[in-house]
Image (spheres, rainbow, N blue to C red):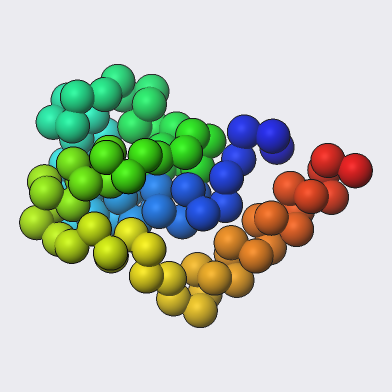
Length: 92
């Protein structure tokens, strides 16, 4: 559980949704932004934190404003909060 970042997981899910909506494979998107398939998967799962520079690459590729990644619905806010609570309980 130590390599799980709730905010990154929500952002990664947004990237995954954008990728799928565009009909891209994980490999194709990874190559497009210059990372490995494994790194792309880690981003989408929330196992690795995503830098702002990398988010800018995604926003440019998908032709969206970078702020999209930081605008959270109520459901996403709940997932983030719950994720941190679960993570905290595992670290006790």
